[in-house]
Every structure is written in C-alpha cells, then in structure tokens.
Amino acid sequence: EVAATLTDLALACLVLGQPQRARELVEQALAIQQRPRVVGTTTSDLANACLVIGQAQRMRELHEQALPIQRHRFGGQHPEVAATLTNLANACLVIGQAQR
Image (cartoon, rainbow, N blue to C red; front, side, top):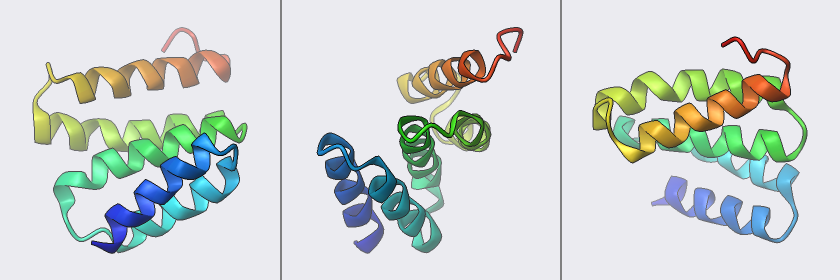
C-alpha cells in the first residue's frame, strides 16, 4: 500500500538525518490513508518528525489528534497509547506547558 510505503520512507529519512523530507512523506501518507485504524499511528509518526525539525507546538497538536484515535483502536492501557502520552508530555515540556 502506498501510504505504508511513504511512512517507511519517512522513517528512513529520519534515520538518514532528513527530518524535513520525513515530515513531507508522512503528511503525504496521512493525506491518502485509507484505513482509519492506522491514522492514529501515522499522525503520531508525523508528530515525531515535527519535533526533530523544531516544531514542538505542531508535535503537541498532532499527538493530541492521535491520542483519541489510538485509545479507541487499542484501549487505554496499550503501549502505543502510552508512547503517544509520553511524546505528548515531552512536547508540552519543550513548549513550556509542563503543567499539562
């Protein structure tokens, strides 16, 4: 599937030190995503790419979008949900919203 391939390419770009390109690829994947069950994970991937390129506010917004999708898909006690909560907390710390 095209969206999954774009996400894989984005992860490779992150490893290769190309976070801007990674963000672009994940945005493309999200735009064409056909399966709602993976939209939360793709949104979370985009959020992580945003942090790497210094867009912590955007990262926070995207993790906030991904969280209810992942909770619905996995339930509240799943490792994916925990990872998104951790990433959301980290984004809040970076942008000075530690109280959140």
